[in-house]
Length: 127
Image (cartoon, rainbow, N blue to C red; front, top):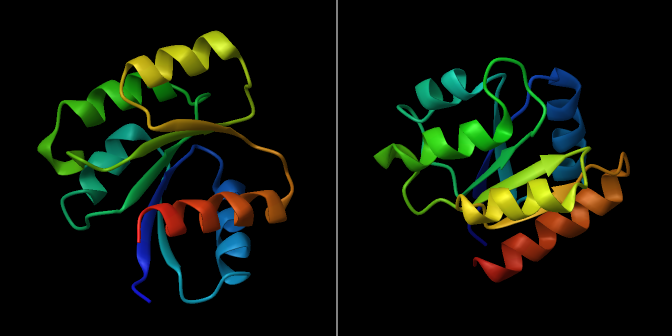
């Protein structure tokens, strides 16, 4: 099995811990890095090439939709599936995210097993 690499962009560091907890429940499938903002993510992309990028919608300065647009403008994220991962389940926001190039939208549930299921599904689709 080849490990996949995730990049989480979220202003809440607790979300990174949540991701790590989920990843630890499915050992050997994923590694994960964390960026606290869109600009920090762009800097990280100079050093790594993720297989998937998860983006929070509600961030200060540059929100999730703006982050998707920035990522689309850089070759660093070219071809990397972008996923909105947010507490917001607003269908209009999700539609806008997909129209900007997001591969999908997931609602934060607070349940690590739900995230495990999402990650397993992504792994199986992209392996």
